[in-house]
Structures are given as C-alpha cells and as structure tokens.
Length: 548
Image 1 (cartoon, rainbow, N blue to C red):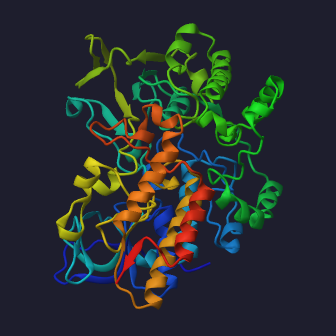
Image 2 (image 1 turned 180 degrees about the horizontal axis):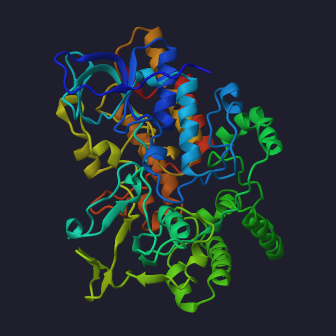
Image 3 (image 1 turned 180 degrees about the vertical axis):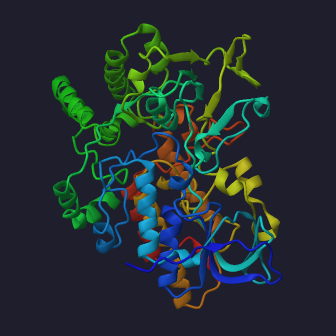
C-alpha cells in the first residue's frame, strides 16, 4: 500500500503560470486513471477538481439511496490484477459510501493525491496558436500553461438547477440530488417533495419513503423499471468473482454495453412465443439490467419486438402496482422499453402503497412555481412542503464542457459550436481544438450507453497512447481532421437513425434541455465495435488526425 499523501489545495492566486505537460480536469473514474497513465509516461501532469476529494460522480451524488446499477465486480479498473483483487465489495450493487471508499483506495494505492489539486474549478481554457499550448484559468485566479488538456468531467456532472421560478423564495430546505450535503438530512415528521422519477429520483423515493412524515412525488414522465436483486457478498463470493479477473478483462471491453453479459439469445424471429417468454422471465429474475442489455437487441430497432418486450415489462409493473390510477401515472405507454435510460428499483413501486406517500401527476398540470411554502401547479393547486428534493437531471454529455469557456483555433467557442450542432471525432477530440482530448463526451459510448468504467478506461488508454505516439516522434500538436470528424458524425447518425431511441424524447437525445441540438449523445454501435474502430485508427498511425 502506498503512503497516503496530503492533497493539493488551490492557491488563491499565482503570478507565474503553472507549467505542465498535461492538465486533467476531474478526479473521478476517468481522471484518476488518466493521471496514472500520463504519470507512467514521465509527464508532468496535474488533475484539478472542484470537489474536496476524489470520486467524481461518487463524490457529488451522495443522496439517499445512491448506489451502483452495474454489478460491483465489473464496475472496476481492469488494468491491474493486484488493484482489482485488493478490494472486496460487500454486495452486488453497493451504495455510495462504499463506492467512494473504493475510489479513495484507488487514489491511495496508486499514490495519486500528490498530483491532484482539489477545491479548484477550471473556468476557462484557451488554445494559444503561437505556442501550441493551452492557457487554463481557475476560479481562484490561478493560471496553468499546459501542452495537453484532457477533460474527464463526467457525462452527468452538470446538474439542471434553477428550473422553476421562485426557488429562492422557498422557506424550507432545497436539495438537488447531484449536490447533496455530506451532513445527514433529518426527514422525520417532514413534508417532503421529490421532483423527478428518473434513476436518481427512484433511488431517493424508495429510500426515504418510510422515514418522512409525508412524501409527495411529482411525476411527469413515467419510467419502465426493472427489479434490483442485491445479495450480500460472502468471502466465498468475493473470491469467486476475483478468480474471474482474467476472463472478465478479456470479455467486458468487447460486449455491446461493457457489461459482463451480452446479447447471446439468438434472433427473436427464430424463437417460439413460449421460448421468448421464458428468456424474458429468466433475465427479469436476474434482478439486473440484463433484460435491457442482454435479452434481444431487436428491441432497439424493431417496433414489433419493442412492443412485445415493452408490454412484458408493463405487465410486471401492473402486477406490482395493482391500482389503475398508479398504473396510469407510472407505467409508460408512449415510448418503448429501453429507448430511455432504464432504472433498477427495489421498493419504488411499493412505496406508492404507503399511506404517507402521494403521487402528483404534473404531466398535464405542470409545476408553475416554487413558493415560500411549497410548490404551485399550473391550475393553482398548492402543495405545502418542508423539504424539496430536485431530481431534475443534467445537461448530459455537453454541459460539463460548455460551462467552461473553452476556445480553440481562431478563438472559436466550444459552447457556441455545440449550441448549434453537437459534433466530435469519436468522442475523444473536436476539430478546431488542438491538443484537447475528451472523455465521456458526445458520440462515444461513454456518453451514456456503457458500464462507465469500461468505456472510460478505454478512452483514457487511447488518449495516453496517442500522446505516447506523439512523444516518440517529437510531435507537438494533434488535431482531428474535419473530414474525418464529418465521417464519424455521419457514421454515428446512420446507426442512431436505425434505432427507436432517436424517435423518443429523453436526455439521451438532449430533449430535457431547452434549445439543445437534437442528436443521440451516445454512440449506439456497441462498446466492442467502438473499441475496435478506435484501435484501428491507432494502429493506422492515427489516420484522421493531423500532427505537427
């Protein structure tokens, strides 16, 4: 075990710029690994994070009920058998405190903290064409001069706040799930309102329902949900999954979604109705995302298959909810299963049978304002609250970068460009922004459709490989070619257009952010396919990227 070093803290200001080979924004899953890889090359590199410690998503999202919905033993770094086997998970889908402790373990085992500057927000990054370097500014007045800028900001790290007029007038407590306080929140005897029933809202609702005085759940868009079965891991279970390390490392990067399981049931059309039903029942009973990511791929592009699988899930939900009014409000009918993010639940549906839980539909009667005492709907109905929890989502994929003033060649603005049209080159670079590398950015699986550690590891390794390639050849600048970027966008759009995902409105399509250009944020051709294409580019001398 490496000695734990004290983390860097942000200086208030500095007269001389901090000179680096590479600056990494973010100290979560991607940022930690990117820092490790670049340090291994001997680069002078520092990571910067707004938070006071490592964790990224798992630092900020500490709301009640926050936990994995990827199996713990696959949501791990797979580059080191020693690192993998040195940590033991307590259950299949651990909660946030355990996940945060795991990331602390990673940072300490790899001795990363000495090169991470916390409590530092990057506010601007401008490319200097004269020097071929990035001038980066922080909220504390610090200036960083770096050859490479790598963004590891996360795809769900820009929360949507201030969505309702009057929020500042509320006299109770307001919490956004993505900025939950470290201190415990006392719900006992309180009138609590939750706005939003996406994956986060579901986790909050099922966790606090039995500890509040009264819970009002404001529902706009119903969600298909799958059951979560979360067994505790015994020492024998831990040894069993650790024994699979090499098999997992060989398999996981090449599946459709970066999970252990994959679509291996054969074609839907080749199965009898009875066999199809048996397969769906089996994956339902698994209590994981397997029905979504490893039953029948046809659900994504065949309307008939989508309709049958959607009705299968609706039937399961109706059996749990029973009440027709609850079914009408909580079971989707206007989009297909799997075309939105699919949450796992364990007690969410049952919570609505509690006498202290009320469902308030805001689909046709939206929230008009937050008042000093609660929420007011469009028809004038007032709901009095002591605590308001906003599970209102994120500006996914793009928001983390457009909230930074990033400017490339000729002063071009990434915020302005993505405000017109969201384009990237394989999700790892953007034409016009030399020496800027991105992870969890649009048009790569890591923007949404992936077990995140799988895809973030792959991107961090590809970026490190490209930088190593440049250093071996004494190259200073790399920039994605515009023609190659156009080809990637066209390839991305062709695959996306063949699916039902693009026919729906969801944060996958940017539909939750007013004015955001409509494009599927995540590459949907498959994690394994994406990796193969990235590997082919690298093996071909990074064709499609211009160097000098």
